[in-house]
Length: 296
Image (tube, helix red, strand yellow):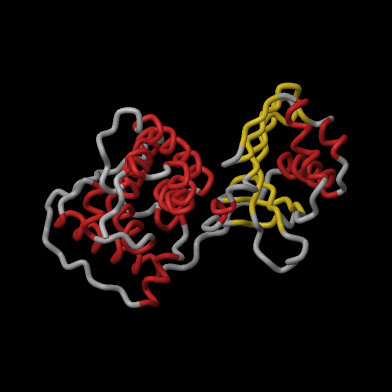
């Protein structure tokens, strides 16, 4: 059955359903679950703006992936890491079928390893081997010819096999003493439910993003956020890192040996807490993240 045209679809429901899958692609393209969420938000804004003038779209999911793909490329260009997208020669290669073991290995490949692939190889492998797109869909999303996609896919898979033979990645450096001190203070007060102490730490113009839910600004508005946390008990905060960045990992106290459920990011200005990003309502962001508990 052919995909329904965009005009007949509840766009908000479609975006909600597609968001985790789109994030999975964006995060692997840019090498970070955090940057991947920023790229995704930018892509969704572009999609909503395009709805005002877009001609009928036969394949809405493919349309969204193409917007996400182009937004990720824009991000990489801005970061001055754009590599050559097109091969000098478009050779006809067989996109060999992978066995189940190799498919699982590619899907579990770290973000840092994906970043070692040239953009075209990275995109084709993620789309086909991680997200399960067909060759035709990959061609449409990347705007590549079939031979070019097959070539990129073959080379990308070959590179990943070679990377898998190398020693494990060098461990990420630990937190700086300043980051550790600030995060530990926030975590300690939060776990003790001493939200008045936390309110004393935040700037008057503090900004909060409850990712995928709402944005708040100023002490009065952000105070409601802490009040909501005081009413629930499904969280326990731990100082750590996400993709090498200082972060607060949030665990479910009923699963002491489980993975973190989501995380928070803090930014400071003149020793006051200036911004908070809480991923409680975007738990998909942590799925591919490299999370490390701080042991310092």
